[in-house]
Image (cartoon, rainbow, N blue to C red; front, side, top):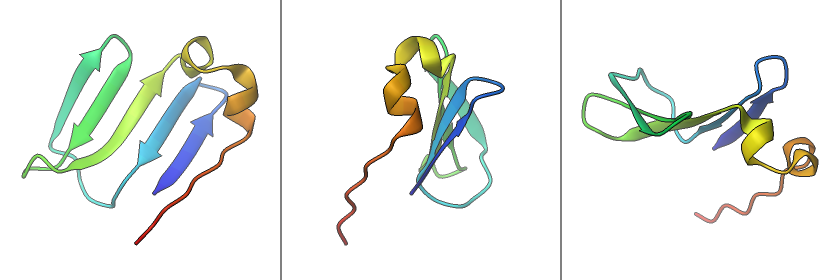
Amino acid sequence: MKINFDAKNDIMRIKFQDGEYEISKEIDEGIIVDMDKNNKIIAIEIIDASDRIPKGNLKEFSMNLSE
């Protein structure tokens, strides 16, 4: 999983897996889920992220991933 914040465009992208997206669904204004042709989630994009996420959290990330 990769988390990327594009400060210039104010977009946060959480990428769960590689692949080509086939379908993008806006589940709420400015929150987009990208899925492949089998409806597997590839990524979630948050538009205007600085309006939705506290600015301090945009600079600092903490993740725990278990296998």
